Structure formats: C-alpha cells, structure tokens
Image 1 (tube, rainbow, N blue to C red):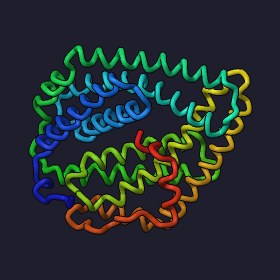
Image 2: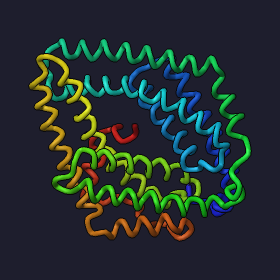
Image 3: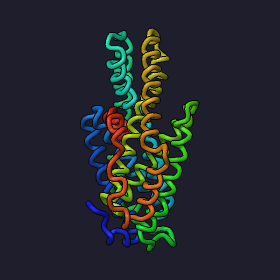
Image 4: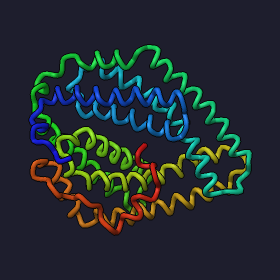
Length: 314
C-alpha cells in the first residue's frame, strides 16, 4: 500500500498507541501459540513478535509513560533469552545435520536434551505472563500520558528524524564490518544496527508505504547473511564444549568463512559506490517524494540475499 499522506500528519502519540496496541495483540496471540506448540517455527515467530513490539516502545519511546514502558521492556527482555536458548538448539541441530550428517549421535542427543529443557523453561515463563493478564495490564499502562512536546508532533516528522539517523549508523557499521580484518565485535555491532534499522523501518512503514519495499528487502538480504554468520559462531561455541565434536567445529569454521565472504561480496555489489546509500537517505528523509526509490534490490546480490531462509527474521 502506498504511504498515506493522512498518516504522516497523525499526532505521534496517537500513532504510538495504535501501533503498540496492534503489536501487543499480535504478541499475545503468538505467546498463546507458542505455549500450545513450542516448535521451531513458533519460537521463531515469538522472537519476531517480541522484537517488533520492543521496536515500537524504543522508536516511539516519548509516546509512552516512562516507568511503565521501561518495566515492560525489562520483562520482555527476560523472555527473549529463554526463547533464544530454544532457537540456538534448533540451529545447532539443523547445522549438525547439514555440515556433519554422520556426526556422533551423542551431540544430537545432547542438543535435543538441552532444547527440551529450554522449551520447558520458556513455556513456564509464558504461562506466567498469561496468568498475570499481562496483555490487558500492559495495554492499560501504555495508554497513559505521553511526553510533553512529543504528543502532537506529526508522525511523518518523527519518522524523518529517526530513520535517517538509524540508516547513518547502519552504513557506518557496515563499512567497518566489511573490512577484510573486521573483528567479530564489528560484525556483531553491524548485525545489531541492521536489526534496529529494519524494525524501526517497520514501525514507520504506514508513513512510507510501498516506497520502502526495496529497502526492506535489501535489509532482509543483509540480515540473512549476517544471521548465517552468527549461527555458525553460536553453534561453534556450543559444539566446542562437547567431546568428539572437533570435526563439527572445523566444518562450522569453514562455513562461517564462506558466509563472511558472501556478505562482503553482497555489500560490494549493493553499497560500495555510495550511490545506493544516498538513495536510501533520500527516501527516508522525504516519504512523499520517495515513490519508486530503491524498490528493487540489486540483481547481482539477489541469489545471496534469499539463501538462508528465515535467519534474518529473528
């Protein structure tokens, strides 16, 4: 859908409440689904729902009562590691089957046992959230008074202030991460910057509409590659603690190097000239004039961007 000029002039406080209410409803539905079935897809979708809701609270922070919003963020950040423990074991089992089909059964059994325990802990936490009627309580808490000066500011102005800043940080971290001798910390910082930009862009999507579809696809492509790199590093750490997994650790190290090379190739194809970055900034600074800007990801990078499935979404 095209960006709605009427949306741009909606007071930011009202926009914040509407988006928070919508995403809280989706989060509550996903929590119920995950309690019923804590499979890989449900846990993945739970993490995405939490990130989207947290992004509204962060991107539109002055639009919510400070104390209540901070309390909600703290509670959700306690659930995220529990969901992450389950997802890490799902990734470990997937990469174990892919990299080492004949790997020792002991490693698979260990990951399965750890996953069962992690899923149980997650389910206990989610059931506690439901018993406390957290959804209704949070909805009431977030409808309190917004920060002064933020209340009537048009959401279009809020978006065009927040998103270029997030994009600038994304490109700064990307240039550092793509260097030949970039550290693991620099790659991690870039992954966080990419997540922040993507979810902030989703928060303000009603302001921009279809004009940012290309940007969102490019972000997903970068996140897919960064996610694949991070998955290898995570499972390497897990496998290094187990006896008899030396071959798996080496296979993961090789895969991680390959994915890192793919990421650098993708970045060079998409952003090395600086032209694409300028197009992004033009789009994000001017929603009304952004029709058709960066709608389509670069063709050279297309096979890479879709290669790792759902990795970017989490």
